Amino acid sequence: MRPVDLARPHGLSGQAVRNYEAAGILPAAERTPSGYRRYSGEHAAALRTFLALIPAHGHAAARSVMTLLNAGRTDEALTVIDRSHAELLTDRETLDAIEQALTELAHVPDERPAHGPTTVGALAHRLRLRPATLRRWERSGLLHPGRDPATGYRIYTPADVRDAHIVHQLRRGGYPLTQIAPLLGELRDATSPASAASAIAARRDRLHTRALAMLHASAETGHYLQERDRYADRN
Image (cartoon, rainbow, N blue to C red; front, side, top):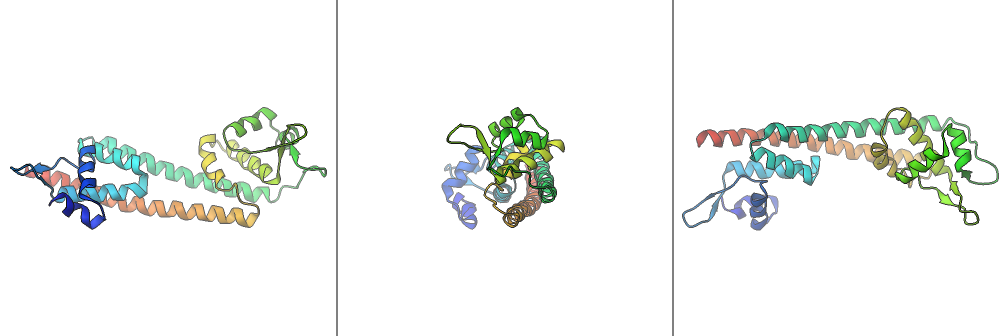
């Protein structure tokens, strides 16, 4: 096959195929006596695998997997894939914990002061934390309190209080801040229990879609390994 023959079924250009080969995503092609590239079924399987890996594991991981496989470093490539599967499981567990924290928070009495938003001291007291802990969560991007225009003190809206409760619950469960932040960020615009539930459901759908993509990518990767070994045996 020519580069264009390999590229056309995927809506790619011949130049994209040549770039993938140069990057190590595809095995090196044979050359005709006149210097033209000749691609085989092995290259077609490699391209299908790379394109399947992208929605499953991200572009960077897909590129890493393919370059490692083509360098004969299969165990390292599989480790990249395993790490991505582990991250998906962690995201599922974190989302479960956030949903549980929201459920528990729904049964917590509203202790906001009657005169306005919650201060850092009042929220820290409510959660039995130090104010410094809340400020650290803020620096980590988990909380986004406003500021009183007159005093400059932090003020926490009901949504901020909810986020602080969720973070507190997850931290007690051993979840690291870096793991909480991306999932909590998707709840930031939720203004009601219904909208929070909708955001969680949308996140679950994305995780489900990614899990299915991983299954497809695993099948393509297994097929590519068979093709790679078959062509290696021929040579």
